[in-house]
Every structure is written in C-alpha cells, then in structure tokens.
Length: 114
Picture 1 (cartoon, helix red, strand yellow):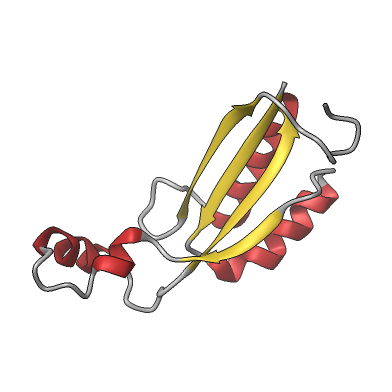
Picture 2: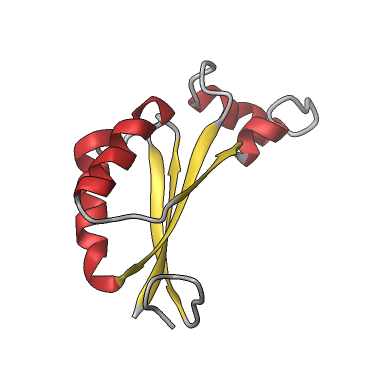
C-alpha cells in the first residue's frame, strides 16, 4: 500500500542534505513547499493570548518552515524515518519538525502505482 509522508521541517537549513539523502536512499518524487505554522500566523494577535505564549516556545529566528510531501510504498517509511532522524535529529526536540504518514487509496502519475 502507498502512503503519503508529510514532513514539516522547521530546521530548513537541513533541507538540501535531507533531499540528497532521500535520493541516495532511493526515495524520489518529493515536493517541497514554503509554509508557516499557525502559531506564527496568529502570534501577532494580542487578543489571542494562548498563541502569544506558544510563540514564546519557538525560536524568533524561524519565521517559516518547509513542508515535504512524498508518496511511497509502506516498506520505505522506515528508511525515511531513519534519514530524517540522522539529518534533522530527534523530532521530539523543540523547533525541529514533525513527520507523519497516511494511507493513500489512489494514485495516478506515480511510477507504476495505481
């Protein structure tokens, strides 16, 4: 079964190395977009106190992040997880990123997948 893997990379200075390591590991076809988290967008609103306090948890240097999407066979997910950990570090640490995968019921235009 195919899965959509989404990586929201706060440490986007790691992006190039991450993509190179994906390519070396046979993981291709990723899409990268610039993105901004909800706490960043709402952080400037004075009436939203909770987001103001959330903003304090983030580094003020990181105004944006990168979101990486790729659709892969399930058996490649462990390799992706390992590469992300090797390049980015422990995602449980603040200001690194998040990663998740969801099953994909249909694909078109992906080499050999239907």
